[in-house]
Image (cartoon, rainbow, N blue to C red):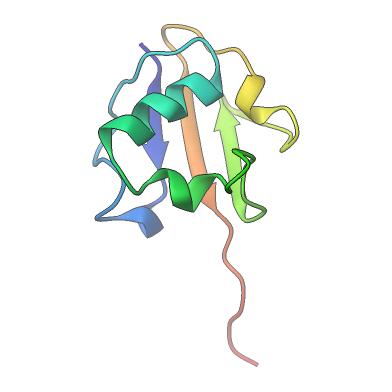
Length: 91
């Protein structure tokens, strides 16, 4: 099954380590993770099921386009990284 790794900014909400979830697309893998970890999906997708603007997804070392990320096919040995962009800082 594909492995999914969440940014540390989701600590306490996202699963720890590199858990495996079933799915043939990034969206299916994420849906399985959301089902296992209620509340997680709100941080990744909006009410229409689209990726939030501050979320970046890599699959198998490729930065996925926001428009097609959820429909991108993954294999049994795939690694999916879910990152949140940071903003702000010191002035």
